[in-house]
Length: 412
Image (cartoon, rainbow, N blue to C red):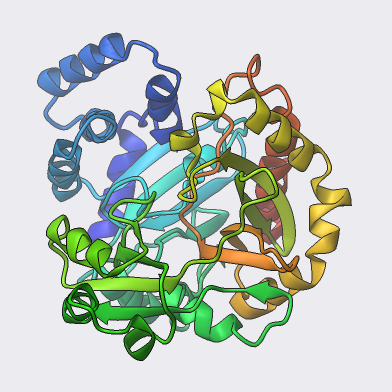
């Protein structure tokens, strides 16, 4: 019996985790997490082998600061497999291959399974994992590790581990393809697709940005001039991202960044006539597109939390119209682009952040499997979100059920 098979047995004999969706919901809705924190701490002190309590504590700490990853490492060293029960747990038994890291490291399966009766087992692997466990008691699996520089060696190892796989079906079992979902590669792969605009993008060394900061022509270095968008490799959520309109901006930007490698891209101004920027998130489940959210801001750097959509009635009106007419409008206008994305990626599940370019093309910013989709927004403020998110989650669970062997599918 290998180590992960033994860890699976321990997970079945141990308490389940609360899960990321339940914990993040507390902080997302500004609820008091103290009672849950104290209960978890009491469990961990009473039973040093209550690894689930330790992992849940790491998730709570990740919501407030970086120390959560240290607690996560300690938990995973003790136990690399965890069980999360949705509903009564009488549905599918699902295993997910995951990697240590923050909540942007893996597909947010716990959020996608909310409302189900499925049991989710998260199996943490790394670049040195020698073998996968015996998954014979499971119905279906999911390869949840997302693209990032840190995850590249893990994805390469999973690719080897899945060669000749004889176990239950695994969705997104294309780790090498997921590793290719880098921003610069997306631009190269989709540059000739007429329905999609991917801003010119390249990886660059710090020295190239230093040259631009000292007055070098960015066209000669990057192939396009100001304005530029610079961001550290592996950054998410706008962290470290800046618009550079002149040489002085590049020089000032480097004073705030310690990285040696960056993405530098062409800036595409996609503001509408009123000066508003609307960025959409679309999930694809077995080839079908689903609206996730549309954030609206007067700032070119559009992110849902920073846009404060809860305090933005005009933005919510735009989002509501987009979500309610998505399948009859946006999805039809960009059907060719959606077909091209599905054809290019060949993944069971992925998510894009996009907008509409001034010429009507789909403006693609990013594609990956780790972007957060959820149903946590308060219904009194976002009443229009419940139905679209339910459709997405129903489709995801239906996909899992379809891929599971017929004998393993829960009764309708």
